[in-house]
Image (cartoon, rainbow, N blue to C red):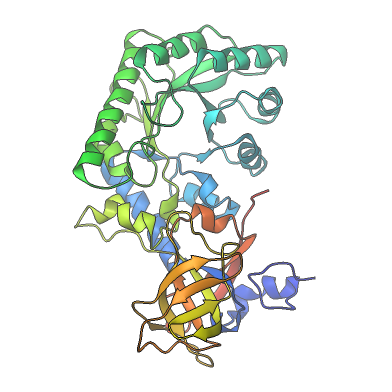
Length: 418
């Protein structure tokens, strides 16, 4: 039985396998649908790799965005240091997929998860965060009892008042670092933080808040080095950077990036941006650093929603067959961009139509006077927030180029969300 809502009804496993060779037309696929544009994906991979090289930083992209083995492997092939994850389960997936280096951007204090990591992770494969001495004590007790074969690398997380997790002062963070150094089951691997919880706009006030916070990360790293807490000859990781402020992270932290140890200790400055690979037409489009850099072509939106007009119950209102179960809504509602008329194979741009509300399987579209939008027409939507797009789909249809006159489906991208 065909169970992927990304494929035409009645499709078989052979039909999925044959997508790359048959290249069926997108207009033959059902709605609701979310597509990935291969042209945009490759552009974004190339753009981010080149940007990091120019900025002098590394990249450990957050895998929670896509939870896709194929995309993680493409990110690694494009030069990523490793993959970042958020939960013990995501960590287990990364280990099962053989990701060579995995950073858990969270405290690992569940004893069963610690024992699993000690059994399954190769020496040096996994790094975790800690923002309290209590977390260090739990790791020490559990891993020592489990006779872990190698010390677990720990990054001290520094936060900020009003932020998310993270020790709130340098003194508290140094206490965590000292506790790590006294544990034979752990090794101090660096300093971590997340600036994205401190600001949500791209104006100078927000950027100043981010800069000030990042300077505290550098100060903590320097204090740990000055106190001699890092292991002799070991590598130190200095990591921050979601998808909104990675330019400011590079501005403040890149001076410490020394991947060959030319100045002494090897120091890896790592961004953790994840949304760049698909970008979007909403939140990240509005705040991406590359839109603040006029000389850069920027990222391209690779994710789009497609829905059929199923009802025109009153003037100015259309109902389409995609809702909260299919399209993201937490960082802004979908935006109607184009329409494929019933019986047509191509899309044409539209303006001024607006999604006003969403139910589980329907969206309400306000239709301006003069716009013909009829039952049976298919609307293409720009989406906001890749993370809550991917987790609604076990597989997404990959098209060669969403901007092509007649896009062709060239494969399915599988996701793993548990």
